[in-house]
Image (cartoon, rainbow, N blue to C red; front, side, top):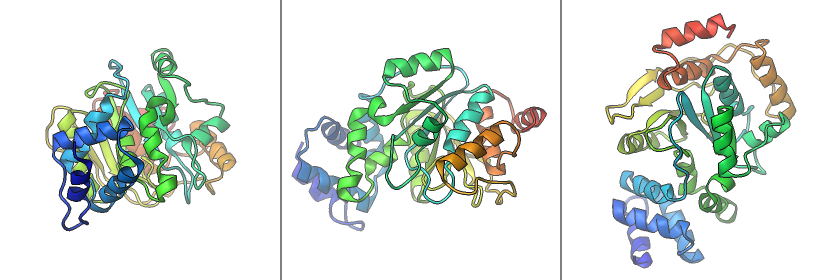
Length: 319
């Protein structure tokens, strides 16, 4: 593989750069994950990809290389996989609440993300305040899924090579392709479970939905909140559903209106945890966009047969 030629192809700027084909993308990312690319070339590659954006074949090729570094657990019924790689910048981070509510409603939940971010409030920090610790090994995470149906794992345990690339953000000052890929991964085989993911930029929506079609994975895709997967109560997004039969993408939930429900007053960990407990204990209602996201998840992971059935069941439970 000629690294200089690859940099030449992808580094010509947004208008003139070329996307790599599937095989070259796979080989390149396998080399990156294996520490076989020198630091100067790696920085050039990551910045070039940041400027031009990943092509569909590049995204698929990178993921194929990444799969070699991930577990391949067998399917569990009624399972969702939730990424958390951004944290709260302005308002409370509701990803832990989404995960805990789904688990409470009979769904197996695997949550993965970063351990800390000096500029934001991460899901790991919120869960730590609730005395929920991350699994320390892949084997422990698997046991937790089998025994309790819930596990949280940080990316440095789940996939150390990807964690190393994520950390380059603090050297380069910018996010890179690893931040896109981290939101797509799962410790289960490709066709197992449902992946919840979000995009921050509109041009990534067709790329991400096509990616899930290419690997024949079930997924719910939306514009999240501050990079997190939960729907923003103040600017809710539509939810796109990708089935694992490779069929066309469908709109599961149309874009809604801001929810008129109480929210956490700020992003502070203690405030967020107290508010989450109040929602879990039915003292506050679930914000409407989050409730619709939960209903969608209950249907696509086959807990219920329809949105109306899942919604009626939630209402009967007091939610």
